[in-house]
Image (cartoon, rainbow, N blue to C red; front, side, top):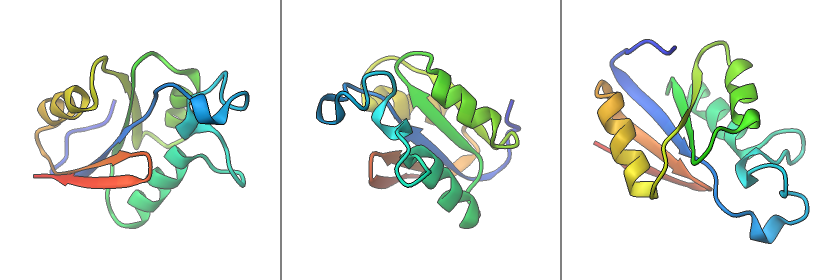
Length: 116
């Protein structure tokens, strides 16, 4: 489990219907498809850590083995959790679970937003 530490944290909202990447993404969410050896989730996590933003939480709609695998390889600085509902529901829930992570950075695909 990630310790509560004051400072910025990153929430990566991952999941959804991989219509445009079929059949490549039939068995894995789009953010976990490796492109040139790294998935979008891994890239977001790596760039955030290099910028001093840590930890990272990856949120999916269902338990995803790829997310759990990436989290397990992150030396405890990445967590995978399941929060059903809309993107807004996921962000609100993460903000409530981790109140000391401020600002809370949210990555949704290739978009990054800040929640104060």
